[in-house]
Length: 304
Image 1 (cartoon, rainbow, N blue to C red):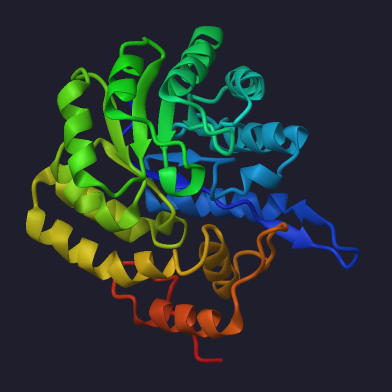
Image 2: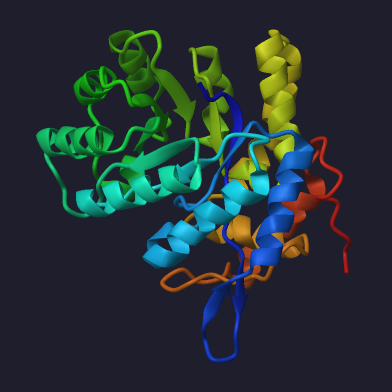
């Protein structure tokens, strides 16, 4: 149903002198336009990379609505609608459906430390309540809420749960999951650095952080994979490696927002408890971006 390069969008903010951080709608629309021009296959607003944890409910809904209206049906919009509160996640998923999102991405409940039975019931309740395609999101490094293979396989039977974003970077776990799930169930990489082997094993695409700044190169890799041109795919994969590493030198989305700021696309502004990238890391990031050898024209930073 969804495939290829799906960008996990950053949320640009304007930092006011009084400490307020307001969503910069103009910068956000310009960022969407860059993604469209690069040919990405879908966009994902209000996820982890979009600092959803610090958005108010009204901001969260507004961000999804803005994305849907601006994209205007040109590519799918997969709305971040996850929460560790099942009722809140149902409300966000309902709101996403109401404004016209094509699907919802639902992170595994964090902090509460639910059992596998609790994880299953959480997702099943959302899928029963809202009739929209839903993608599970397994990222135990952030949530400490690992979705077990058996739980994924049971949830894959629900008609509204169509796939999973797997950010474990554990290819053995991916193998076991694919083997137990029905053929129609889709697997999406949530780890930029391992997207190539993930796709080789049957992945449908990547929900990517790095494609915020290098969408053309990520798209070139995906196009080569789909064409079976593994030499071209490996070339793109290797060219992205240092950039992918740089995007996670600190917690996502700190580095990718710093990269967007270096490119002049938005302010270097995050909401607490996230803080801007430290100066030493900023210099390393700038150097990595200058050395990047992908197909992007926009990453050629000056030395000034």
